[in-house]
Image 1: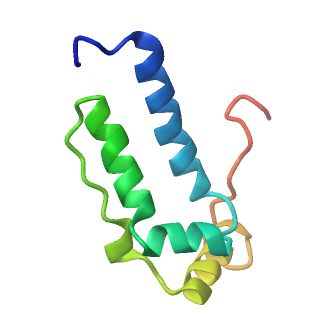
Image 2: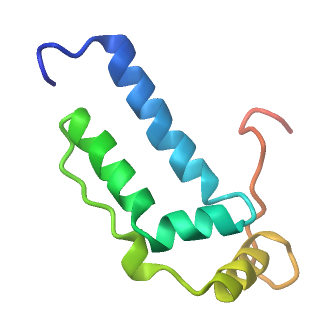
Length: 95
């Protein structure tokens, strides 16, 4: 890691990365869909990864579905309407 980086800065950047990935588990709203399709998510994550010396270049924009398809995919994956499904859990430690 960069010499000037302190542990608190790195921790904050890792936290931001996790928060960004957590957004993918929330029902997709227009703002987040726009951030994906306009490369904002890719650029933000690339910057965060770079700041902690990790060479990853996300390409969510390339793989993004249309808004209606993204919402349907979310419902199929997490709502239990179709099988198999994987409902997101609030905590790994809660029963």
